[in-house]
Length: 364
Image (cartoon, rainbow, N blue to C red; front, side, top):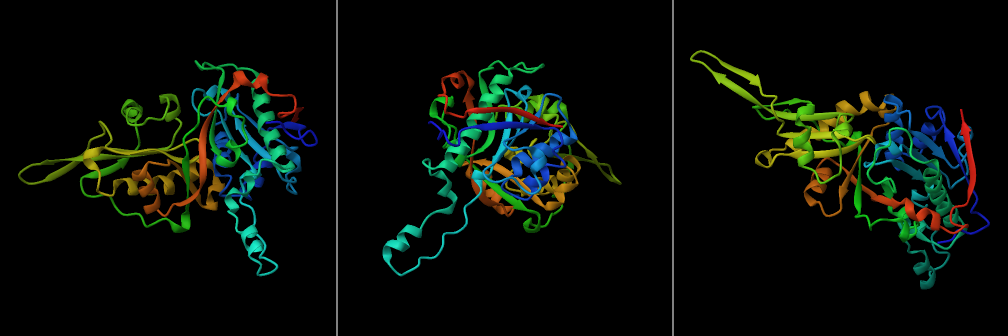
């Protein structure tokens, strides 16, 4: 897929002042920017010396906003084999509704009857070519930067892009992907629409997930994840309370051996690794634990800006049980995204017009 030569030149800029520059810009496009917005917030709370925030515009020009299209990415290759890149492009934003037909002619009506969520998938226009150039130039830049100190991935030729919007995935050449990534549904939660929090049933209490329970947590999820990453995730767990009865009193003590339910907030602020052990399902524990996680862990771990009131979750398209939980919590379907495994070994085979690099500049 060759980009139009008239708009193929893309410059990648590096920004070290995201709180003053790109965060306000991303905030203005919430909830569409949630994944990379929260990932940068998390980075500011727990910085990584090998992480970089990259843009396709000079970050100091964020006010007024740069002309569209533009892209912002958070990159840290030392996170491999887990997610190494989160990004947002204005190409993800829904287009405005079509203008009404100028007459009652049936042809005009048909021409205006389009799906605004998919209008961006026109692969044959200069705007699309420029967005493709943004993506391919970013990938080329990451590849050219090499492996940073502390990089220990067993698959150095693989780059994992997290939560990649389907509109953007459609622009990548197929040979750049190790496999066709399955679709995930992005659920968006507004604080104003969350249901009320109810107390736990008698015999249970809340806590956090202790590192000694990480092997259990990892055994219950098919997602490739490490204990190192779980230790960075805010968590809420539910434990069984044990009662000891004597002839005159009943004493309730806590049993912190293993949790019977748990949920985490990922590094992008998304609901992650939700699980209720099978014998405890059907009691409303999943809903309670997620509400507690959203209400009590977002702001302390992602900053004061969380007052804007958004949470999110990515659910595998065919996981109807998890989708049911998301919808019971008031989640609304936002869009479709993917975890894309990019084959860096194919980057050198891209044509000269496929994401031409205009260089790298730094904003200090």
